[in-house]
Amino acid sequence: MSSFLPPWFLEHGPALLVAMPLLMGVLTALSPSEKLSWGMVLTTVTTSVFVSLGLLMQVLHHGPIMYAVGGWLPPKGIALYLDGLNAPIAFLISAIALLCTLYALPSIKAEVEPKKRSPFYAAFLISFAGLIGMVVTGDAFNVFVFLEVSSISTYVLVAMGSSRDRRALVSSFNYLIMGSIGATFFVIGIGFLYMQTGTLNMADIARVLQDGGVDSRVTQLAFAFIIVGLGLKLAMFPLHLWLPGAYAYAPSFVTAFLAATATKAALYLMLRFTFTIFDPDWVFIGKSLMVILSGLGILGMVLASLQAIFQNDVRRVLAFSSVAQVGYMLLGIGMVTSLGLTAGYLHLLNHAIMKGALFLAVGAFWYRFGITQVSDMRGLGKTMPLTMAGFTAAGLSLIGVPGTVGFVSKLALVRAAAENGWWWAIGVIVLTSIMALIYIGRIIEVAYLRDPPMIDDKAIAKNEAPLMMLVPLWLLASAAWVFGFDAQWTTGLAEAAARVLDAGP
Image (tube, rainbow, N blue to C red; front, side, top):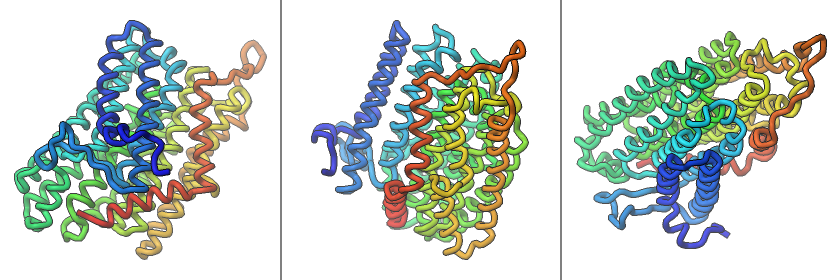
């Protein structure tokens, strides 16, 4: 069976993915009750999970889906497009949103003021709609529109962490400045493409570029501006300065959602523009990928991992780790081979699982004890055994222990590097995995091998996180091992994405 959805849902599913959270976001902002707001968010993201899964199955069994908005066919009309490259990411974003929504019910009560909770949920739905929109749209300018929709609402979400820590306002402002610079670079690149091709439909842009203008300076400028703009959104080293503060001081629910989805959507756009609009066979593009992306990926892997080792705030440890993991993805992309693309895309999917679980666990630590410092996590293995076990399971995956998704994607990267003869890259992968062992192992050591703090000469009693926080955490932590022992499905998705990229414009 190719899909469990009725024909109407398949026909209008792409539009529903974007329109429903936008509409519900407006209604949620007007909701008089925070519980009603949460219920509206839950209904929206649950529907998105089923629709995106149905569309993914349809794409895998029957090929790409194109939806002409308003019945106007491209290139004159706006199209929504799903294929083997973006359908898995649309499902990933929806699934992470559902898990984070379950987690949000207790988490937001502890971190966001009551009067701000309905607007908070509204901003989340708008951000979710923006991420889904930028993934499924087939129009280059609408990518920019959805990018800004997602970014602006995300700035609001990060700033709402000020109820817990006033530094969230500064982090949100820094994110706004860097995000605006990235968006400006991106839209200038789109402008150059429009000047060169006379169209904004992404498939049509690719067709026109193939017919002529391959060596055009305008095309090269467009590529450069778009890559820099997306690099800022992606937190590509050294354009990552906004990320540690945003992840450290945003509400826990927001950090987990962003870490698992936002950079993944930006990386998808980099793949889409680089391989299906431009062409790696062009000398300028190919050299840029091989030298710049893989080079910056390697630098990010090493230097960000080094920074993570010397952080004492667990959220900043994981934030710098995210920059390093983006480096792994860029290394795979920069190889410009089928194995490299498969490995990079596979790590994109796997990192969302691992890092989502880790940030959910850190949020639970703060919820129970108000702690985020590594030095304060003494004895958490005894006081919060289930939560810490979830953190450990995901942390071992981030290190790359055999049997985990982290090992699967790192092994795929090693194989791709060996095929390319990049033996030095294999050395860097091993080195940064050892560095991950240091910064994750340090946290695990403090939690399990140090005694809990004492209150009135008595050890702190066991005080586990609420079930609504544990369930999403353990679903992701379990997935990090389930898809590690049986990676057939995730590897199949990565191979399908690589086939789309190999096909080129």
